[in-house]
Image 1: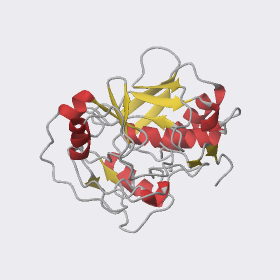
Image 2: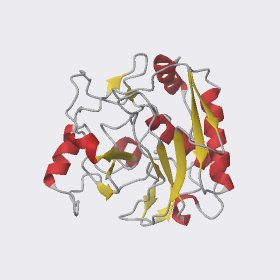
Image 3: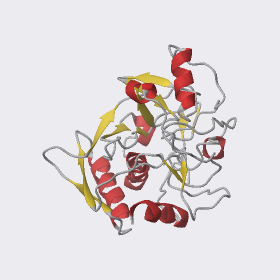
Image 4: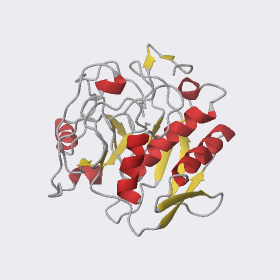
Amino acid sequence: MKNQAIFFLICLLAGSLITSCRKDNNQGSTDKPNISNDVLAQIKAKGFSTSNVHAVKDGYLVEGDIFLSSKDLSRKAQNTKVRVAKTEQYSTNNLVVALPRVITVKVVSLGSAFVQGTDLAIQRYNALGLRIRFQRITSGNADITIQGFYEGPSGGYITLGSSGFPSDAGDPFNLIEMNTHPYAYGSNPNVQYVGSVIQHEIGHCIGMRHTDYMDRSYSCGGDPVDEGDGGVGAVYLPGTPSDPDPNSWMLACSNGGNRTFNSNDIIALNYLYR
């Protein structure tokens, strides 16, 4: 997820899930050091933006907060027909299965604001009465682990958090990483802000794509990016609007503050998991 950061100034007091995000002021940039053209072609074929791709351990970070493993990129596209996105809510082909289901979440070596933010995100999901529920645990193996990384601003933006999509087996993505650099959340992180980013990243873990993934300029600014549909899926969720949705929890870039589900987000989650 990207935050609205310009020249390394973070608008922590401004009114992105997401998200859950960061703001890149040059969405159309073709400056991708150390990323081969073959990899970029694979990323584009999967339906993701090739702007500002970052190589990370075992894969690549795309669209600000989405992890794609090298295995994901080499996998052949499924034959699932997808609709080219506008600004409705969209899911991936893979969703969490074996419902009803309790998804356990563990916070590892992070401060109290991240623990409280996790509890807030869990509370918001569980209040919807879905067939997936979340439970924070403090020991043993969890379905989703939340841990920290430390990374400063780069190119006018800063990563707030990252995660990925459900596995082929129908399990939620198992890792959310949250940035502990002071530029991300400050020295005294706001629990609602942190919780909103975690809420956004959990959305990816259970199969939600960015609401504005086909035009990231909607929440991130910069040039519009439209990469078409791809192998991981961008499945339209019936009942969500075709007009811009300014308050969705799955917008690509954070608004710098508290953002939870709007009415269309709830329609989307009910369609998938109720």
